[in-house]
Length: 156
Image 1: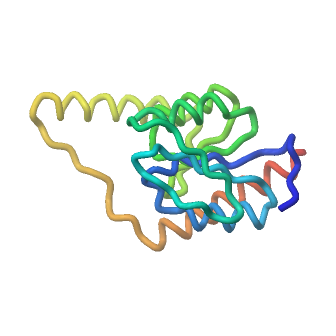
Image 2: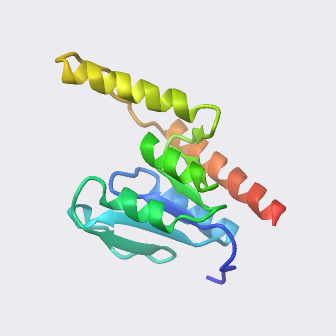
């Protein structure tokens, strides 16, 4: 796969990512490199067309690797609002596994909501988890990722 080293990459918080195949297809279509970052706790097997990076076990290891290796213009796929906020500060783009685009207009709200939910749980309360991941979520993600990559390539 021939790629431009100065162009965008897709970095994936891959430990529990349900859209790995969609990322691989989008990366091939857009001719950009994809990097799947996973801790040794969640061993990914080697896959053609993507780079696999394994990091130390621990819940923040993959996030730290992604933050430290993201550059402006990269696309990060994650469901973690904290990671999304950090990569947005580096002028990268962040996309959820359901196709939601994280940006300056929504990230503060999402972080606040996460904080409030954590307080409720620490106090013994219950909060709703995410709804079941659907085929429609998968399709929306693919569409949004391809559009974002197309837009980035148009700019360069």
